[in-house]
Image 1: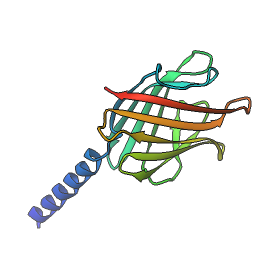
Image 2: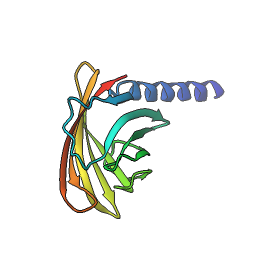
Image 3: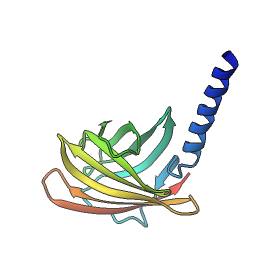
Length: 153
């Protein structure tokens, strides 16, 4: 009985590793500002790190807000379209990710249950770059849109 339990645990562990090993989003991504189209008044996510966290994914973001002040935010959840709490982000208190296909995620950020931004993340087939497009409203209610390009580190 003990051997079966150990084998079952190993199979589950390996299956979990295979699931995250196949996720092209995992890793460290640095903003390529020269290629990106960012609004002057908007935040810049300069470094984004996706890591496996058990059966979840953790996304840590470092950047600067529209006034140049540094920030750090974190989100931990699944790519299942459900809202999970985000910390350190003045613009949103929850975020959800949905896996569209092997290289594409869609996301929605909400503040007080109201959608404030949405977009998609597309990792290139070679896994070396990714493009993030988003649209939403800034603190004053003005519509903003951005296209950010990232290089894998």
